[in-house]
Length: 528
Image 1 (cartoon, rainbow, N blue to C red):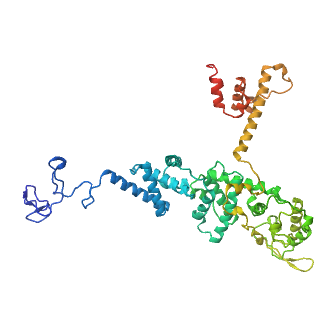
Image 2: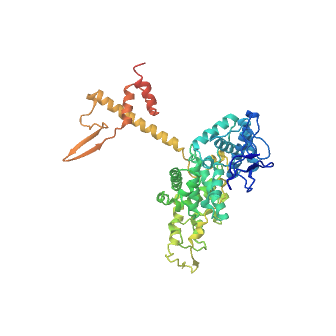
Image 3: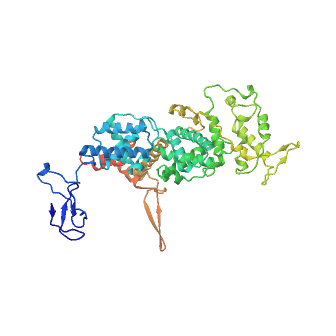
């Protein structure tokens, strides 16, 4: 069969159709004509199909419908996310089963489906009490954390699950092992930092600094703190970025941690000199005190020091006559904690720590005598001899081995066990303290507002010699300059006065729900 079209090579009208391939070939020059093999469809949908074009095939003749194509694409998305999350084959299969159960085997496609799979992955890990921060999942998918949280809530409600509480200790352990900032730390130091961090995290739980807060900023603060204790150079900005949390929130939790340690440090003889600025240098002594305090046994009757053979002079001599070398390497003499290692005394072990109680005055005496003995060390680290000619030298680095890791708080504990431990500070939840202060502040404002109202309504009762404490902005002209003097009244005082004039109960005003009270008693008062 010849065609009237000219050849693209020689221009002659000598094109014939090949019997095997169906391509048009020039019978003169033998050139195959490209894009000349299209065959039209005739007879509607039941007619013949094109030679090379067949919709819905993979080259072997298998036809896939829309549902099969959708399921295939959904499974590819699941496999890709599971690989990026590092899930095992067992965990990946659990996620697939959960997604198939919720969607009734239909799966899905669109921007919502990766968020749905991320929510299923998070729920699967939380069911088994494994650590998988939701911020990591949101960062991997590229969605907002609140959007992912809403999807998690929908998955939990649909399956009627009850997830266990978030384990902040598991989150801390996972973070310290996976954060790039700690990748160069040796295994021994990393294990030491892990135990110290678990101890600090448990203390923060006991002090309610994790209650009602996002856990990962707390983890970031503890990571930076234990890194500083072990001379590991990290920045809180880098750690917060690696954990996908806000830097400002992490700094706030770090500040709260330091402030709590300062409160604990007040029991030490030099505790009044410890502030937020120098608490990191004094933290080894404070944590050692907290560790000893947490190992004390409650409920046992303490015997007096007279019945246990306790001699303060012997302990002082034992501590100050240690044959160790002290040098001024990285710590000041004022920060030395050798005297605090009471458990190293030959007359006192940790089991006997509850048989007597050393007063702050005794500790101060020990510390003073220790400083007198160490004061002979000059800045060059020279070694001096005592009056008996015995060689005595001091090395302050020997006192840096303050961490023992013997407390149960260095291990995973239940919340009840954590609250039963004594670490030298019993703090109230910050939100409760803030609420109490707000109630007290509003109570004082109500009292002052009632006095102002009484002075206006009953001028005769007011003292003419007293200056009125009306909280208004007064402008005072001084020559060409205009100075503004602000007195103590603000918008809250005016609202309180308005509510008092509308006879609102003081107990209701103290709660601070001003908008609701205004709607009920002021703006809707005419319709009642």
